[in-house]
Length: 463
Ligand code: IFM
Image 1: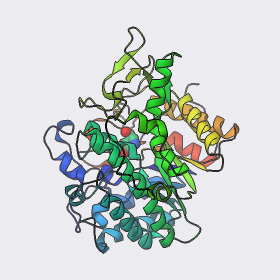
Image 2: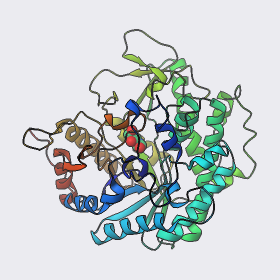
Image 3: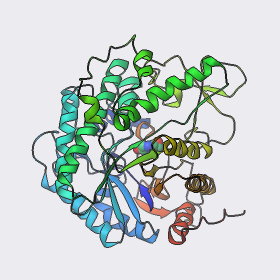
Image 4: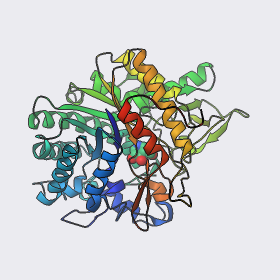
C-alpha cells in the first residue's frame, strides 16, 4: 500500500463552517505567543473545499491509499450527543471520491483536535473524556464503516499527553507532569473503549489499530547511567502505550520512575484489560532517533532543550526530566531532526521481535525542508527524495528480515499547518502556495509516484 497521510486541523480549514466548533487547537493557535507568528488552522490549505482537487492529485501521484483524520468538533461539536450530519457528509463525500479514484481510505479518529468543551470539562486528564471518545468513535464507525476498511483510534498519543499537558508546546498548553500521566492513561483507556465501539459498529473485515510515535531511543554511551536514561525514556515514551495496549499492563519500572509524582491511583483495576484490545495492526510513525545520556557531556553533539520537543521551557518527560537529549552530528532536516534511517529499521525489527503476530504499517514518515518554487514553476526537493529513498530502503530491509509491513504512508501529502511551527515548516510532497492555495507536486511527489506505480524503488537522481 503506497499512501500519504494528513490530519484534519492541519489541512481542512473551514474552522467555523457547517456547525464545527473550536477544538483545543483553535483556542491554542488563537492565543498570542503559542504558534509561530500567530498562524492558525482557520483556512489551512482549504482542503474542506478543495478535497476533490486533492483526490485528483492523489490519483495522478499513483497513491493506492490515503490516511486522513476526522475532526471531532466537526462531527460532534460539543463532544457529546448526536452527530452533525453536515460534518459526516464531508467525510462521506471524501471517502466516495477516494474510492472512485481507486484509493483506499484509512481513517484516524483522533489527531489532537479535542473539542474545546471537553477540555473545559477536564480534558484528557479527566476519565470521562475516554468515555466521550468511545461514543464519538461509534458515531464515525456507524457513518463510514460501510466504506472504510482501515481505522486507527489515536495518532501519537504521546504528543497529546506529554506535549499537550506536560511541556505545553501543544494544545491545550498545560504544564503539569501529573496531568500528562493522567492524560496518558485516559488515552490508553479511550483507545480500548474506542476499539470496542468500532468493533460493534464495523463489519468484520475492518482492520483496527493505533498509530504511535515510538521513540528509537539510543544511549549516548554504554555506561550504566546512560543505559538507564535510555530505559527511562523508553518507559515514558514507548512502553507507556505498548504495555497497556498490547500487553494489558503498565511497565513496573514506569511506576517506580514516576512514584515521586503520582501513585497512579487514577488507574482502576479493570482499565488494563479494557486498554488491551485485540488489534489488527500497529501503526509506526518515525522521523528521527532519540539519543540520550544521564548527564550532559561536552563534545558529543549539541544538547537539545526539552528533548527536542519544542523549547517551551518545561520538560515533556514526566519522571525522566533530568535525562539529557543530544543532537547527533550529521545531516538534519529543517526541523533540526537528524536523518537516520537505521532508526526506522531498528524500530520495525523491535516491534517484529516483541509482537511477532502483529502486522505493521508505517503510518507516518517524512521530512521538512525549505522548499521553494523555482523560476520555471517547479519545486525541486532533492533532500526529501534522498530522505524517502533511505527510509524506504530501511523498510525494505526490515521486510526482508521478517517484518510484516503492510503499507507505507508518507507524511505528508500537502504542505500544511505544522502545529506550533505554523506554516513555517513544509512536510508536503505537494507544495502549497498559501496565498493562492496553488498545489504544485514537488520532485519528491513525482519520484514517489514512480515508486507507487512500479513497486520498485527508483534510483536516486544523480546516483
Ligand atoms: O505534522 C506532524 C503530524 O501531525 C504528527 N506526526 C509528526 C508530524 C511532523 O511533525
